[in-house]
Image (cartoon, rainbow over all chains, first blue to last red; front, side, top):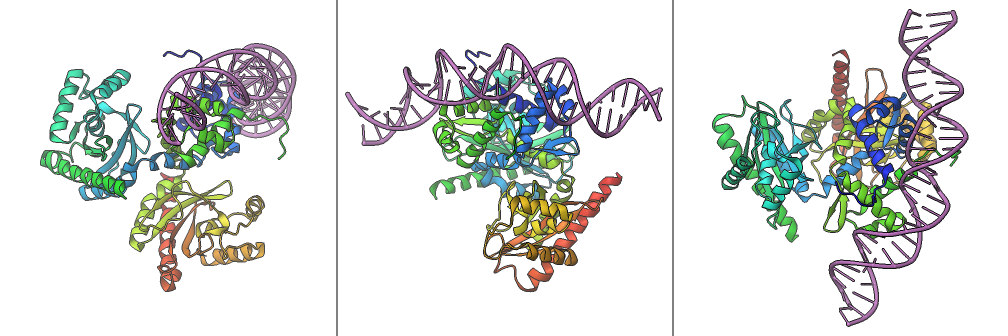
Length: 255
Length: 255
DNA sequence: ATGCTTGTTCTGTGTTAATGAACGGATATC
DNA sequence: GATATCCGTTCATTAACACAGAACAAGCAT
């Protein structure tokens, strides 16, 4: 909120806005994007042209689409995370053994970002790159529970306690209690706090330094995730996997 | 080379250059990026600051890294491709059944871009988003063989016939012969034309309209891919898969 | 303590990104 | 089939602001 002498490059902000609206509207033409982004048509046109010349945007019979040049950027962004490299295969195995969708997410800018998933089920909480509030998912809560208290305060200040469903935690004291319980049992449960009737089991992955590197979770519909399967078997499986990943992270250190 | 009245937004080009050098150098500081991109330090700094405010770049103890915001953009770029949605699971099955790495790639801007892969083997021809010349891989040649002749001319004019290894096709007539043979047999073989001792088998995927939508391939080291396994079994398996994908693409039409 | 880094701030100036109107082409409308 | 409306694209002007390079501060190594 406090910008003194703006050191920002406004054209860049503009391009990013164009790209984000294109992402949501694609395929789309100049006019459509300009209207949605509330920018002059000619301006949007110039940006799209520039982006197209570099391959970041593709023109297909008059309509624009995002170019595949973004793939290497996204890939480089997640390849830099050692937890991604260590967890990939483990997540796939976890998902196929349990017969559920399995996810790997990391915290960035106060949100949980899904960086890898294994699908068994159509009911999905979001594709690669999706962000969810840390307070309304098993992965998010598992991460939060391992962050220093000040960081939790920061994040809650910044993002609040969004009420995604009627089960979402919206009270700060309730959150602290929940986090304490998660620390004690080692895993987090989500009973429709993010999406109604969608349940999940998540646990944090700690690095060799003891810092949170991310979280693993499995998720599925209420009717499949219940009873001892939900409350015992899945937590055990998830904890096994986070344990293996943590060991892999240690090996990478010593090599 | 022929720019009349430049309608390009130069700041955008600048940002893209910063991002691309960051992608190759990350984690990196302002000075390192500025030197490599041959841009003034302050300029790079301003761009990085702007990108960081939007989450496209992350600052970790003084060093910059690509932010996870690129994941949704990359994901949106490939999700728009119906062949990606149809081929995902088939590629995984193909790879695990054959015990080889399996790839899905599409042509964009005259290059083959890998948009999905299944790994069984360490020897890899490149991660998601990697581009390879169409003339030096089984996927690329399979795609080329299905493109209209004028398009092939365009692409060869633009990218030439790069000699990646001593086996690469560098003669235009030889290419045409090869493409004709690929059309007849339905699949393409790569005998170390892209990387020495790396072999591959690829076949194109055609859409309901008869246009090329991409190509599937399996690849592995020479010592594993040889004899009837390389020349018969793998081609059969790849063709089976492209066939299934093509059928899926037709279903999606009618739904 | 001193010499190098590094990231960051600053300020003027020249470039150029932004703008809205106008063009021409295609499609839709009646 | 004529007219109207939409689209992408071009254009010219002007104000804005991105750029650059030097100066600053902070860290690290020597």
